[in-house]
Amino acid sequence: MVTSGSPVTIWCQGSLQADAYHLYKEGFSDAWAMRTLEDSSNRTGFPTESASYVTAVQYQCAYHAKRNGWSEHSDPLKLVVTGEG
Figure 1: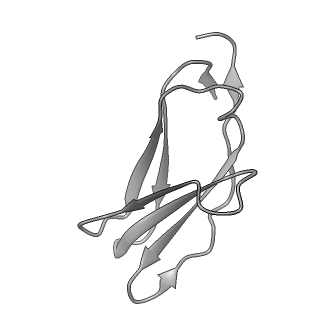
Figure 2: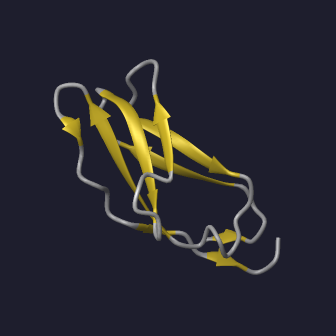
């Protein structure tokens, strides 16, 4: 839960061999945001400027590892936005 107008970072976590992450947003058929990593990392963040009714939807992550290709999508995360910031 976040307050309306607050900045939000959605964190995705995967394998230590991950070299890229995709963030999927409810209502979009393709990845909503993408991050390619220069060094392998097991997590990355996707910041937003401010939470609003537009960002109050479900998100899912997937990561890419050279040996295994793309992971399954994560369990959905529902971002809940409350009140005025």
